[in-house]
Image 1 (spheres, rainbow, N blue to C red):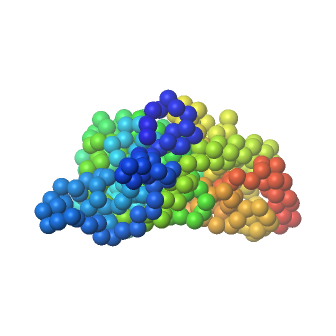
Image 2 (image 1 turned 30 degrees about the vertical axis):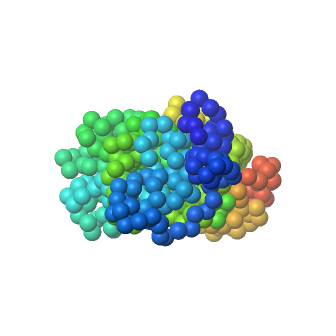
Image 3 (image 1 turned 180 degrees about the horizontal axis):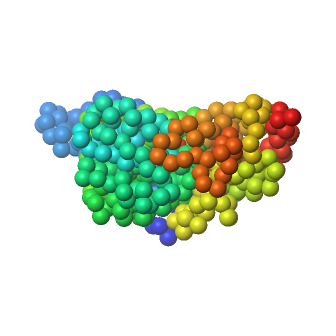
Length: 409
Ligand SMILES: *Cc1c(COP(=O)(O)O)cnc(C)c1O
């Protein structure tokens, strides 16, 4: 309905992607609030002449064939595009990883070099080390916190730069505008995994990114019942991304698109709540003698906080911390003692989750624990804070610290 950036985030989410032609019928525009779920493989044509002209309709927002979606998916694409200033369009994928794959395939060709942040999401690393490698693309990792290391990593064959901020496990904040400026000066395309903050917390394209990727499974879905991913790009990259998505048959079901739209409507409220609770948990963790370091860029004084404050307008409840020494058994005893946190992957749902995190085991270009942390402070925990009350979560973490102490004796 509107993409006016001056409106507040929750107002924009309320109106995003709503068009009378998708929610009404002839004679009664805007009949219902949400676009109906259009289940369709075949799209019908009135006659052979219209069928012959069909390919002309093979563009966004036109009926053509099921793989091109229907108003349910179009409404979601339109909403996501409207949330990202500078965006030309959005493509949907069956998962966040499928979206990352779509971005790589749209940009990279054999012989190219992909530069990847050493703190990137592990399955993203795996794509570089396996699929892309097999296709003749070389992936080189660089220290996300060292701009000189990035600058030195560029070569004649560099084609794309994969950024993520904060990093999935370590919450290290990258200077995205600086990295994009280095890439732009060399004609290198920037792809950013913007799942952590999403467009409400970080306007990726406005900060210089060419291709913004998101796992909608997380904050957009918001209820742990949906897998989906998206790519939102500038004008220059929209056509190649869309072409690769169509060539490889990427499509999401209208039922899932409808769930994602439903999640999107309350996303700002949920993010606000989980961010505030996450910060309260981080502040509490920081004071615990068992904790060596809290990984939460929203926490004043923590590494990366200045970058977060400068570039971001929001956060989320994904954070972590490292124990002061201790054993794997003690860390596991802590996790197993938690009653209000589910043990499982993902985040952005209404429920809090916990997993062990061992970032040091996958990094290749930069050390972990980083400078300033003891080598023994390497056992970490990742927390995905949900919508529960902060006091209850903190009380739960507090009693689980007792289990860590007992196991450490
Ligand atoms: C979860 C996640 C993904 C992958 O998304 P799926 O929808 O689970 O495939 C990619 N990047 C980040 C940062 C994630 O947290």
